[in-house]
Image (cartoon, rainbow, N blue to C red; front, top):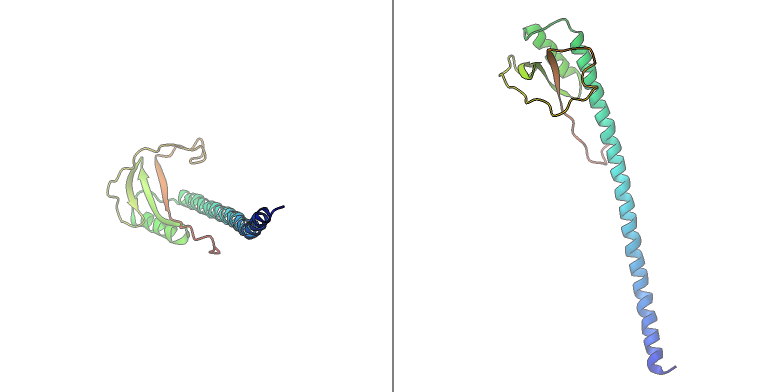
Length: 153
């Protein structure tokens, strides 16, 4: 082997000895960061799912509570019951009393402003129990904020 080939071989081995650990450490860091990102996303998604279930359970419970009341219309007793409901459930911010799609009154206001909601895009079977025709519907304005992934609920 000539000196020129020997110098080229030594240079190649030295370059490989320098770049191989660097490339390997960059690859491992990227892989670890990706795995950590996936774990954080899964944790966040599970928390969102848990929060959504809590919101839906509270909305259903509040709906059952309002349906059990013997008051109707938008009289002061009815408005008081609506306000009490919006304050007693954590995720319910406002309760609306609708006739069809038109607001009659709200827990935040004493009388409705006549706002009409557009027809729904989709009605799921669980929204209203079968065989229970309702001329008026209780609508719950639900507020829930998603906390950053590191927040413990």
